Each structure stands twice: as structure tokens, then as C-alpha cells.
Length: 166
Image (cartoon, rainbow, N blue to C red; front, side, top):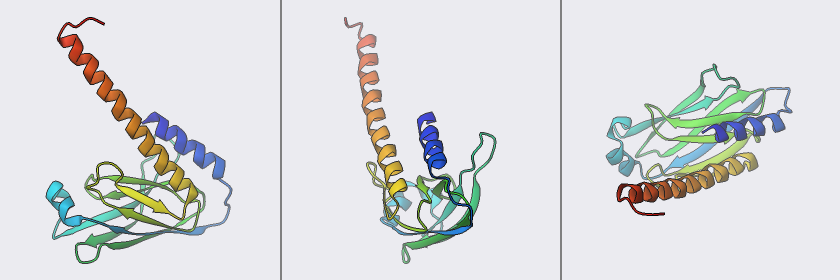
């Protein structure tokens, strides 16, 4: 997790060149909301979820700031979130109530997100934002490598329990 914070801070510092306020808009679609409801019933109320656009401020003690929200439903899976920002930074789209999080960078004024929170491998894709795409690639590569390392530790631990030799 520290590595994600470091990468985020690096991206932020490398791209902090805006001095005037600019709009930031995220549009997208949530796929398989019915399946998501079956897996996470506490997060879906009346066949709807609420997506939050959160700004992640720089500083260890600063709490994320909600900038916008939108309700997505089975009948209307499309969404639009927007905010006015002064600096490039890291933002999250998250499901209200503790659901999955989609990290983004506002290096462009408008980007698109497609998500399927039930897909365990790659639950979202992003278009229109090179920095958000790099962050996406990093997050999933880190996750894949972390899973491989955890699996190796599991096998090593299993061998220890069997008192196997090296």
C-alpha cells in the first residue's frame, strides 16, 4: 500500500502545473449491477448504488474530501461525476458504504471509466487519461505480483507444517 501512495505522490508532484481552476469530469458505466447486488447486498439498496468522487489530499492526517456523488441503478447504469480542481492529483471513485475503489488522476478534463465490480481480475478500465491508465496498469500489475508472492508464501508455510526439508 505504501508503494501506491509513493507512486501517487510521484505522479502528483510531476504533474502539478495547473494554477487556474479547471473542470474534471468522469463518465462511465457500471456493468453487472444485479450480480454485484448478489455478492454485496449491503451496498445495493433498491437496486441502486451510490458512487462517490473523492479527492485524496496530500498529507498523512488529511481525510479524503467528497466532491460529487451519483446514484447508479439497474435501469440506468451510466454515470457522470464532476468537480472543479485547481491542481492535478489523485481521486477515487468509490461505492458508498465501503465498496471497491477506482483510483484516477485528473491529468485531463474528461475521462471515461467502465467498471464491473464483480470481475476479480480487472474490475475497471479507463480511457482518455494517460496518467490514470498508468495508475491502472500499476495497480493491477502490483496486485498480480502480490498474489503470486502470497501463493508462494502459502506453499512455503504448508511445507513447514509438514516438516518438509528445504
